[in-house]
Length: 429
Ligand code: ADP
Image: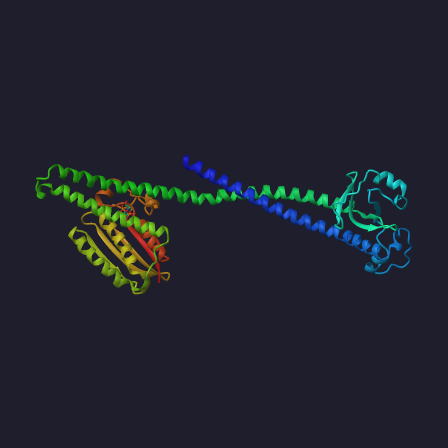
């Protein structure tokens, strides 16, 4: 429950970050695009305003030319210089802010649109936008000049940009709608993706937590036993060792168990963090396996078990000697642990489909079919009580599986026809 809340919070955080990031990205994108569109749309009007101003300064007498006939049209650039855009309205302002060329503009146009319009001197010589009655949009260029009497006047060149403004308004609306749709889609996608991504993380988090819990449990048991036994010994300091032999032997065996457990845990922790590097070299498989099996043959004999070898692969393999030795020890230890008197243990090697096969089989207690899928899991023991007796912790096969994987091989377990188990390891030649 607690874990679920943590993951939910994490997912929510992730989504909020995504929402902020996408909103910022789409806003910047929208602003840039709208800015570019505005610039492109206004550039023609701006050029016309500037060339009109130039012409007014160079040839003031030629202006304005609203009704001039144009029989043959000259090229655009020339035409623009010779015949300025008739859309341009020229307002001449007195320094008191009164329009002094009402006659040129036309009185009805003046009364309808410009009566309430006032002179704004903030943007002299800078092309800016303005609106009349909040309805009609213009780009304008205001500049200072002097009249025939030498008085300062202002000329405002205006060009109607309603068409451009409509395009920009529509475009803005489109960009906003698209951005909202994309933000919603991105958030939905990030929600789905985050759920998918969190799945394996939650799984390995749970596995890791379970591993730590199991490890501490396994460590606590031998430590408690050792502590109890030592405390007991301390209560009778005058006693002879021979009389407390059992307590000491038990403490020693638990210490060994503890030492094996910590070394196994270390191996797996290093395996998880991909810290362990294998030192691979060419190994004569049969010869090496025979060497590892030799002491086990003696142990088996001492336990009245039959040990047989059938080594037939006759090839060299590229492997880490230490890890390969560890793999064989795990499998042979298990074979000895889970067999009784008169049972037999066998090691067989051969080549199949260009792979070296190593089989360790026994006629022992076997593994139930339904439990076979768990035996490579960390801390899994089929019979907990029995494993403890034999010193098993449930980490051996996990380490074996990791070693095989590090050699690009595979390991599997099978039930023998009559009795017992066979572990089959496939390694590349
Ligand atoms: P353990 O230290 O308990 O042996 P392993 O990881 O080596 O841990 O093995 C996991 C479990 O698989 C064992 O507890 C045992 O139940 C089962 N197992 C492994 N090898 C054999 C075998 N040769 N015969 C029967 N059961 C086995």
